Length: 341
Image 1 (cartoon, one colour):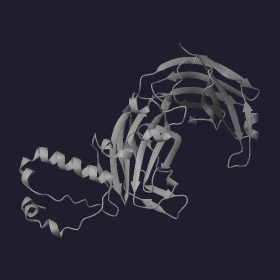
Image 2 (cartoon, one colour; image 1 turned 90 degrees about the vertical axis):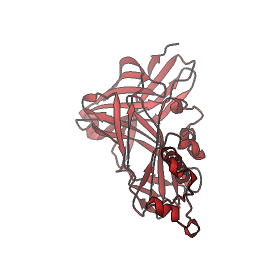
Image 3 (cartoon, rainbow, N blue to C red; image 1 turned 120 degrees about the vertical axis):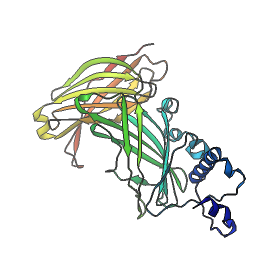
Image 4 (tube, rainbow, N blue to C red; image 1 turned 90 degrees about the horizontal axis):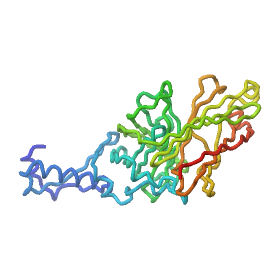
């Protein structure tokens, strides 16, 4: 539309559309920027019209966007438990502030952090569809890390109102030769959101790309091994960063055990000498190049509570038939890490 057409436009004949908080913030930022660049518009009344196609995504990225949308302020707080496992996430993460709208669903990436091993991304969703309490993201459309040969992790989406959700994804990319880069480039194309409680699936054209620098950490080499007759588990190292604690391990299991239980992977009980519990029976990402005989992995959790002098890490091997056909647990001796005071 030309400038003359804008000036001659009859604003009273425009059809007004309801827009979301995120779209309002987008327009506000856009208009403010245009006013600074083009003073000729200062005295001209302009109607801002948002047009979102049925399958076309509109995107925007403004540093102050989250501050203009109340429910976007510090998304990570929705996921902090009483142990405050993400207490430093907001302070040391990178503001991403990317948002796109497609098919009535706006997805906005809030913050992200790369601790050198794991990547954590917080995001929010606003929609005019009724997904109910159980919105999910299609699993094939996971976060893709450039150069990684694979990655695995976890994802949570929590409803905070009828039309708004917050999400948290943590994943561990696996790089060739086990060498993690100083900077990672991440692509995310969610493609589909669906409801577990309603017959609803919404496809869209959301597509994001951003990069993260790794946080500096304090690496403590451990190389301590605990054994079972069929399992050798070695805790290779513990790395302490401003947002997380990362344990790196390797294990070897016997052929005899794999014949009976074809999948053997560890979960952990992690606590400190003051009684704080960091992990209670969960694990992290890992990889095997020989059908499970050897397994290398990492597990991450929050920062260590102030005053603790020991970290107690107990591996529990889950030997499984897979597909819910049965499993058994093999408890290994705990490994005690002395912490700096």
